[in-house]
Image 1 (cartoon, rainbow, N blue to C red):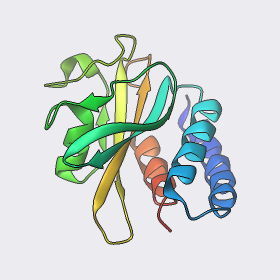
Image 2: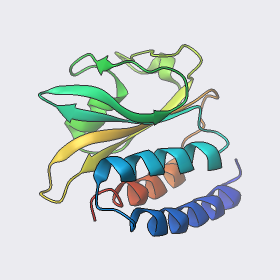
Image 3: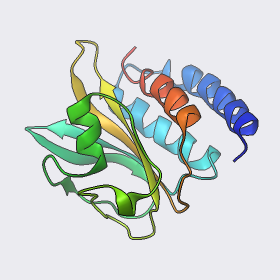
Image 4: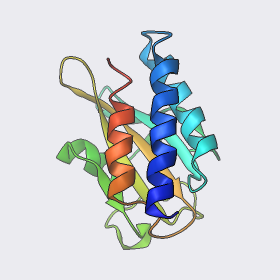
Length: 153
């Protein structure tokens, strides 16, 4: 998607999500709503979901798309890299990412954004896959970080 068009769409989605997430303080409700809106508004998203950090494991939470891995192998893959580095990870080609976990072989690129609660602790990761290589960039990272911040506000 062309950069200007993508940025415009994210601005509209961010405004919509800001209004929708004000309706509840429940983070799971907010996550489910965020996933649904992103998945259906962003054409280049194939799988949109959250892995929650619970008892030292990354366990699948609310998501949109094909069946997901239930628990991600510890310290392996894109999601754990985002958790361990405490920063957004953009992967243009998942085949070239060391230790990539292939929950669905149709995924070709990925972005993972850590979710931080009000205490400043990482509690999960927003994970989005695309069927196309090089589908995520700094615009996605910038807006998805703003969107993830809506979970705990």
